[in-house]
Image (cartoon, rainbow, N blue to C red):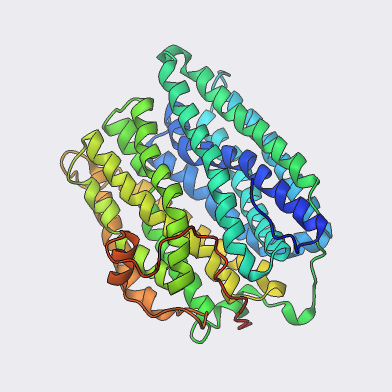
Length: 453
């Protein structure tokens, strides 16, 4: 249960109460897809390059669909109606995706890619519409507290689905594993259907359309020299590209190269997600104090360590510790990546700016995964595995993108405290805290929004 501001209107309070419940259902779907789609593809016989296609093609098409998100919302005339129909479409497409596990149909991997394309396109469109609607429900100073609490509750459901999937696939004998994948992906379809029902009960807020709020993608990109937000978009896209060079192939390395069982596979991922959930409130307090940009720049300077450290050992305990580091760093980045947009862009232009940011990140995601899939089978082996050489390459590109692009954008809030990255690290580790220890509510964020479009 999330404590809501009594000053909000009753329809908004009801919608916010429904939203965290909807988050439970939607996160079950998202976590299963995010953590088990690669494993499902490998089970269906996909090669590493096909895994690259499974990640890259849906993301690139999802990215270009962002060109149409504002037009679609105007066509529907309602963000809530659009969210409901998109969620139902996702539920519908996940059902045949689940059936691929048990039906002896030809071309199962291409079919899985096709179903994933529909899923990713609708997911990208719904995320933009959802963030836009939710940000209109809450004033700026209320958003960090609510979104942080919602993320923890929904994330707990995601953790439960991750554990359920690992235990299910581990418990079944190899000849029965097809039914395990079928059940796992059927659960995602049912969860998304429940999500659609809850979305339909939320209050809609009309989206204001004014000619002065319209700007094309090329108008947006042309401002890359003077616009702080456009510089941030390029930084985000380059970061995601460098991460996705290796990101989809950690699971391939575990399951195909190291041949770990599904229980071990789940435990290694669980180590990351549990630390990620626990550390979100602490990252939130530091973001309130030092600003979202400072946290983003701290986390991306640490990103190269993650693939680099995978090279040194394949022991399960070591990989779990490494994943704990990854979860800790990603918690800060994920929290601040969208919070920065709320601070930097006015409500009237947020749908379009979110769409362009999502599109650019999706392009980076797709290009990274596609190139990684090609290189994963062609690079010279390191310690016997070509994928480890890919991890080294990803570490180098992560470092390069941080060095080149992180200095180009700045914090937009005016009340942040000037602190160094080293001070932030010491404070995050509770060695030298920057403030008195207490529970983070997220109430410290200012209402200021920098409108540069």
